[in-house]
Length: 169
Image 1: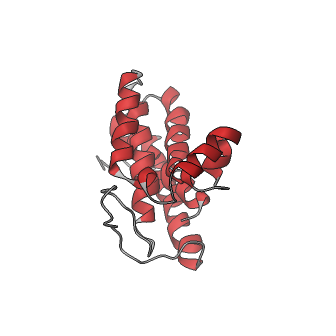
Image 2 (image 1 turned 90 degrees about the vertical axis):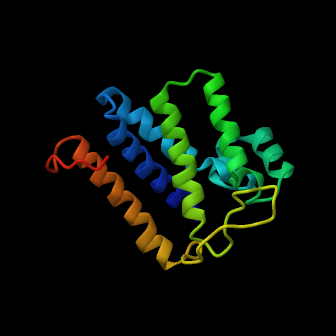
Image 3 (image 1 turned 180 degrees about the horizontal axis):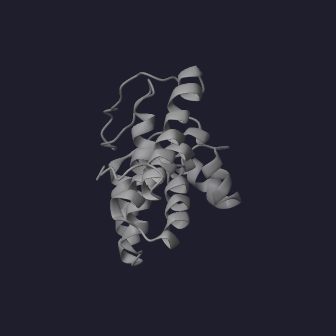
């Protein structure tokens, strides 16, 4: 998937976290921001990706040279490592949850829709996926990405009370 789709998926995941945790209004923007950004993080291993560029210069270059695309950074091992690092840093629960939701759902699950699959159990060579959507093609651009934005909007509309008193979580 393209970075725009991972960003949208991260927003949807962040909106779900907001709704699920009944976050205070002051946490809405930080949660959405964190989830959207962590939706981009696994692509730090791809030279020229938005995540790689955001890390910038030396850091992005080192990350891209250390591993091939869709290997370690697209694994549950990396997700656990990030989770543990955030725990050690005493990141508040709602932000920790936003980071994990953005990473797992905004990136890994979306990449699992791609024919290349995702090496969830890296370093084992097994790739997991359902080859439905090819990166950059019409399915991603006109179905997956808009669906992510609509889902984020739907969750936020419920959160702010614009849509009935539905109990999703």
